[in-house]
Length: 360
Ligand SMILES: Nc1ncnc2c1ncn2[C@@H]1O[C@H](COP(=O)(O)OP(=O)(O)OP(=O)(O)O)[C@@H](O)[C@H]1O
Ligand SMILES: [Mg+2]
Image (cartoon, rainbow, N blue to C red; front, side, top):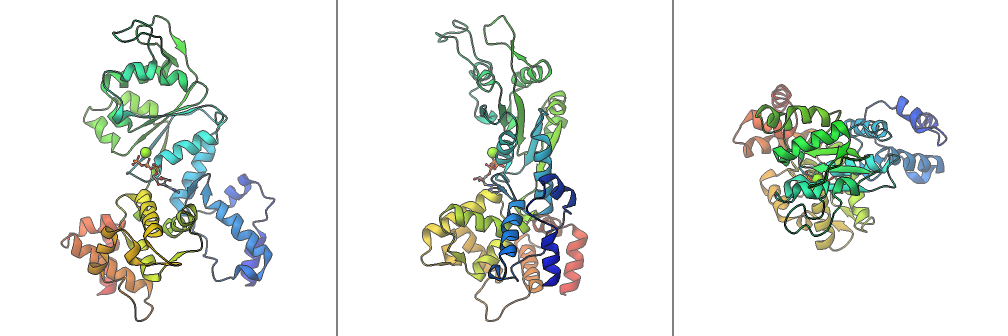
C-alpha cells in the first residue's frame, strides 16, 4: 500500500498536462482495482484523474498505441498540418479527426465531413468547389461548395482512396495553392481550411498501383496517424466496455466472467464499432444486472461453443490457460495456418511458436 500511495503523490492534481506527458512512460499502469476506492478519498481522486489520462476528448484508450496517438493529437491539433489517418474499419479514424478539430483554434468553425466513396460522380466537383449560376444545365443559382462552407474550419475527406483521379488533381491544387475555383467561375477564391483525410485501405499500395497520385499522397501524409486494430490493443477492451455501458445508461450492469472472457479474447474484425454494437445488443437483450454470454450478438455467442474457453467454469482459470485455449482455437479456425493465426492473434510467428512450445 505504501508504494501505491507514493505513486499517487507523483500525480497531484495541479500538474500541467505537459508535465504529465513528459513523465508518462508508455507502459500500461498497474491495475488499481486491488485498492478499494473507499479506502482513501485521495485514491479516489487519483482514480478519476487517471481515467482522464485514458481518454482524449471522447476517445478512450490506455494501450501504449492509443496513449501515443493522444500525444500526437495534442501536438498537431493547434497547427494547420494536413493529417492522414489510416486504420481498418471501426478503429476510430473519424473520432480522431473530430478531436483534432475540437482541440484546434478552429473548433468554433465548421467541421465538414465528406465521404469520398459516396460523392456523386457527376456532381462531385460542384459539391466540393461550388458552381456559378448557369455553369451547367440545372445550375439555376450560384452555389457555395463544401470548401467554402468549411472556411475557417476543417474539411475531413473520409475514404480518400476512393477520390476520382480528376478530383485528386484538383485537391492537390487546393493543398498547394490554397485557392479554389467554382465550376464555371473565372476567379480564384482563397480558402482557409485544414485538411484531414482518412483511409481504411492500404493507400501506399494504391500509390504503387498508380491508382492514387503519389504527389497528393505526400501532400496529405504530412502527419500520419495509424490506428491499430482492436485485437492488437486488447488492454483497451475492458475500458471501452465500461465506457459503452455508461453510454447506454447501464453503468450499474456488468458482464459475467465468462462473457467478459469472450469479449476480451474475441478477434473483433469490426474493431471498436463491433464491440460497441455488442455491448449495446447485450444491454438491450439482457435482463438483470449481470449480462451473460447469451445476451451477446449470436455471431459472438457462436464462437463460444467451439472455443471452450468460455464454457461455464467449475474453477477459476489462469490467464495462461485461457491464452493456450484461445491459441488452439485460432489454430483450429485457420486450419493450422500459423501465418494467419499469428496475424489474427496480433503476435509474430516466432512468438506463436514460443507459446506453442510452452503449452505443449
Ligand atoms: N477509442 C475509442 N473510444 C471510444 N469510442 C470509440 C473509439 N474508437 C471507436 N469508437 C466508436 O466506434 C465507432 C466507430 O468509430 P469511427 O466511426 O471513428 O471509426 P472509423 O475508423 O472511422 O470507421 P470506418 O472506417 O468504418 O469509417 C464510433 O461509434 C465510435 O464512437
Ligand atoms: Mg469513418
